[in-house]
Image 1 (tube, rainbow, N blue to C red):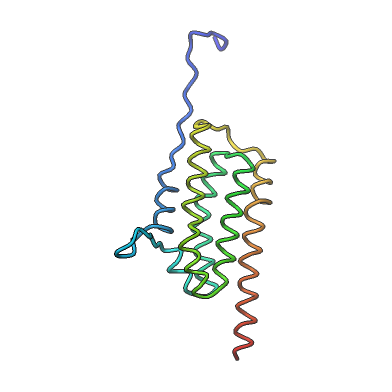
Image 2: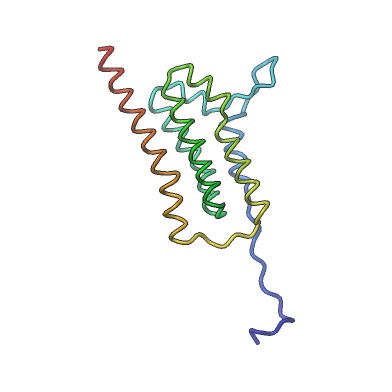
Length: 163
């Protein structure tokens, strides 16, 4: 009988954030600068390669945002995560100084903490709806793609100016 209150409903699996935690650590804190508490990750290192490095870092950062969408974090939280990634990409446009600022900004660590807090608030989220997915694309993917394209355009003009 489907309406029988004595029959327990199947449990939904709890959200697993292991991959996002590992990606955040790899990108922002894989090694500590000797004699300091400052962590440096692959995001800052690959960011040293103009254009391509920032694209690679932004792509890897997308794993955390993917988990956030999968876990259906609130739209305002997705917007903050998107802003962190856009700021990270824009900082990466400035050679060397931007990479130092990227070490201080730690977008991936911030986004992982936002994701973790949202999952603590609702550890068993419903699957994302179409409207939610459209909001995620509008708030995260589009601005990030625009920032990366802006980076490539800036790189093109810099190379053209130098040559």
